[in-house]
Length: 327
Length: 244
Image (cartoon, each protein chain N blue to C red):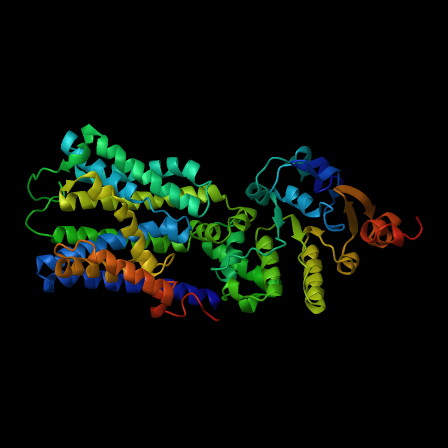
């Protein structure tokens, strides 16, 4: 009986996700405005990124404010391979993901010995080091960045100058993949281990969970997906420089949707992104003008409001029974 | 079986200048319930943590099931069949009761469906069946203690280490706890329990090992141990020593 309700909930999640994805897929039929399409692409991308961030920081509880590093690595790997060696972005995407996952594990080796705030500080510092390195790395364009040359619209080269739609569909696919990976991991050995590690590492260790390896696994998956997002972003904006793909604000932007929507939950990051990204984009263009920072004020206000009213995230408003069954 | 399930050989543990355990050699036979008792500061918890793998002894060795596990980390000891509970309960608070137990079950069954089934059986066994879908943070203290036991049992241990799991309960709860411990032993699990509430431990254990000042003071049947003048002195001081 218990089992069926659990299985039912999992199936319901999957069905809801499929319906939402299908609805999202047909929106371009009605929404022709390029500006709005642009916002949709960004929303899906940040949703996917936040979902990926959520794997390490939400489920496994290792709060990272340095994920911009993996985002930037993905973007740079793709852009460099394409401009210097003519390697197709698709390979750059996979390559960037693998490089990021490996670097995440190499960094995790010393950093996962740290706990709590000290871990967070380490992630910030390491991402800043990455930023500085790229700032000064001449071969990679240093502070000037890389202009990705336009070689004509094609899926093969993953470049589209005339329409945003292909990017939209890719971002949608990425969001679906990130969601599905999370969904799948949630009811797997790793998902359980991660939550155990987050709640109480000592108890987890006593139950046979190798805490260190669990964190490494979460870091690798998380970094891989974020790097794929970074590759996508490089292709989408077709110009990257260190600040625009590795700046600290990207680390925050990955964390905020998840925190807003519900950290460590399946739907939280996507929900947070759907609220936050259009809001920031709109405030930027309508209130913005010279006032660069109004969007950040909105962020700040929202975070304060949420942490006061619903520290567990907005997702709790939608399904109160989800985490608190049989209370 | 003549070889003991667990054996410590000349175990010392020093924390800086403090000697918590000195030259402790104890053994636990298969199927036994052994009580590790002693006054506060006797080194019970340190000894317990040495066996569970939280610390590595400064000197000496620990043999489990014929294998030297002295330097193995806690997770690997669990893999080999040592389950433990914590004195200060360490539930996974944001997870449901059954999810807590699944974490333990996953070490033997990596298929989720099987692990879930196993967890449900263990919960029923421990009398927590009706509470399976409640968040661990919503359990009352005695239920949390049961959850500790359930989680450890889900790892299918050969040896279960109970760290003061009956302390701080009401008499009725404690009695139910005692019944649970007996039931666990009847399934073939060997139990080593640290306790300082004598009236609970003594009727329950087959053998008691009394630690005092980090050393083994006396060891034997509970009825004999409680009458031993050395034990009375250790607990109550010289003035109360009877036949010494």
